[in-house]
Picture 1 (tube, rainbow, N blue to C red):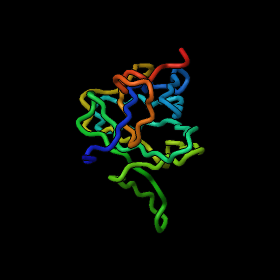
Picture 2: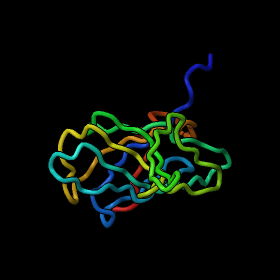
Picture 3: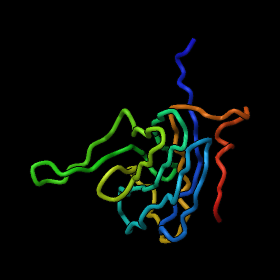
Picture 4: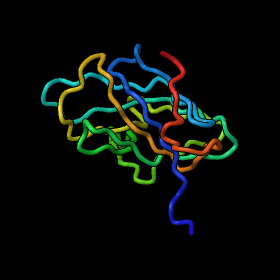
Length: 152
């Protein structure tokens, strides 16, 4: 019975300033410098940015993100259409091809935090869980706990 996809989850901290962002590894995935911007009071949305390096031999996919401080979290892209910048939800997730690097950055792919419960303060840790389609853990146990921080 294969109705449940293999899921690999990385719990990490986005930080409201790139200088304080940390890096994480999860199997063959390197998740580097997650960050977000501080938001003004009353802001209802913010973007989250990160670099994902797939050092494995299998394609993977970022399928979702979760954050307790936001009412909804979606994966989005922004692109220019007929001279107008448009943002689109990516319900199928973001592909992370084998051997490639995917940058979630302002003006392109990003994590969208919506219905913020409170403003994001400068320098504040912002806990976020990223879920990937394919599991790569070969050590058993809780895959969520296998994400480890590699930089202070």
